[in-house]
Length: 145
Picture (cartoon, rainbow, N blue to C red):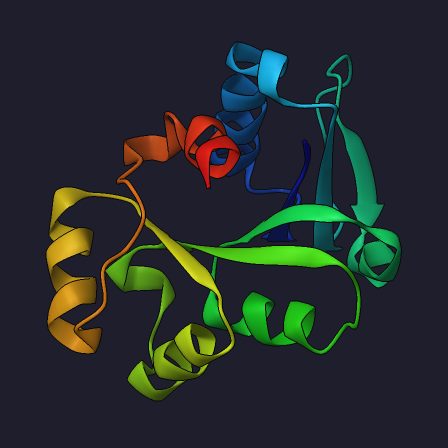
């Protein structure tokens, strides 16, 4: 499975470390890992991931995880063969109407906590995929769906 993570800022070392840790733990499910970013920043070398500016999303095929409604909108404007997943946290979606648009466009949602599961269901009436606290297990969830 090709897996991509679309983040806003490569300087977000906490998020990048979670992505790398999760993909290293579950590399048996992954054929390649890519991180797409809008803003460049320092990156610790030596990891088995490919880094691309978001302008290269057009060439990606696989499962793409986005972390905000803005990133989803940008990714959704690109025509390609990737499935989009939103890593949902109440803090990364500010507009409920955008959330409905994502659901209508077949965006699957992976909640970040039990509270996010309940909040997502309360807002949309839809079920999300399995919860992945601190991204733990997200690769397995994507592999199974």
